[in-house]
Image (cartoon, rainbow, N blue to C red; front, side):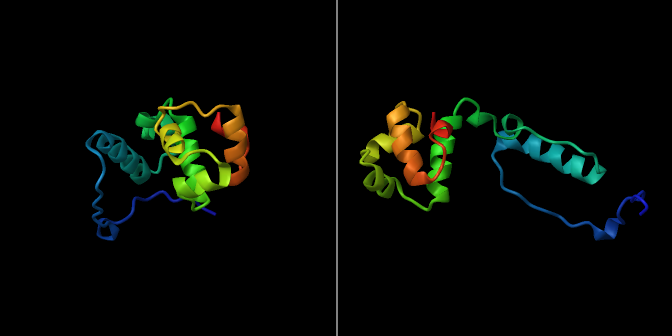
Length: 116
């Protein structure tokens, strides 16, 4: 099979509008330019979402809870951990700790080490 060597005709182009945070705009633009130039380029999470660097635990907890379609209150009922503590953990104001991570991991169907 021959590789695609020609650029797409201009009339096959569309205009795409996105609403992104101002500081992410250059990253999105660079990504779009890469896609159009057909370069193989991968981006790290840190490049795309620099605001989450160092917050992996909080993001993981919220992501697993969302994946299971649970509210903080429902997770609280399943684990016995007060809802406001779960909120503080998700916002990085409270350390999760090994025992709490194990309780939450059981309810969230994940490995507790992902929450530490």
